[in-house]
Image 1 (tube, rainbow, N blue to C red):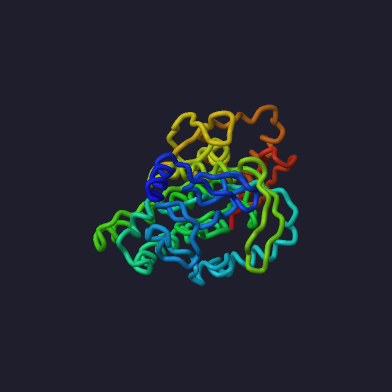
Image 2 (cartoon, helix red, strand yellow; image 1 turned 120 degrees about the horizontal axis):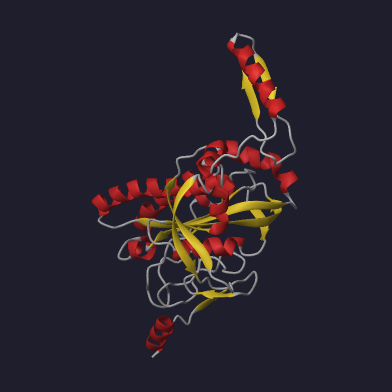
Length: 344
């Protein structure tokens, strides 16, 4: 009788996960809280029963469970963060604590990981899944992002904090594309050797967080401002296998640097209004701000006859072999650049 009741509940999606941090009721499949992005307790995907961190099979229904990250490589951010990035984080943490930072949040997970576990020894399944996580982490670190959590079959990463980068959204997009590329190559090997498909999905969103504290183990405690992490997690859940979804907030910061496909407005649980989403399909042709600006169309240099004449004279002198340096100075954010010309 109980099994029949469980089946009916599962069909109706009746099971929910209560976040221990904010008490929000989440869907049964959620790995992170939809409200505050805190990791959720471990449950069986088949019957919804809460299970221990060491269980390999559900004690209620016998379903195989996704292995928990007890590998020391994933124990804390310090264990998998390259030393040069760790040094940057620890050097800047005093200045960061208590600061409000603009960041891009990345969520990535292995789509259909439970299917990979079916009829497999958990240790054998973990040998298939760990290389995927390693490729995700490598892609994040390549662009100086920080993997704040490794959870089950996925990761959560931040770009823009604790390592500050003005182009955090661009770096997050490039990292997402790289992890898709490297995992796809690995998936081809797994398909040939084990006959199982391996795909990942990635979600991105940009917004603000308040950095609360950064521990010696590099774990960062922070307070989410608005829907920053919530939307990134939703993008991951909505993404098709092998794709990268992002919001307009991230695209606004990375426009010109990446190629995207508009997917229209979609309804997101917890938000009153639909959200415009995009699929990131590749890197754009532009690599610098000047190239991006040129694609949009550069404005004319108007009303600066004296300055243009000075630049012209300097150009002539440089051609004659006289080295000069010219600097354009203006208010911060005005788009000024430094120009230099030198003849050995």
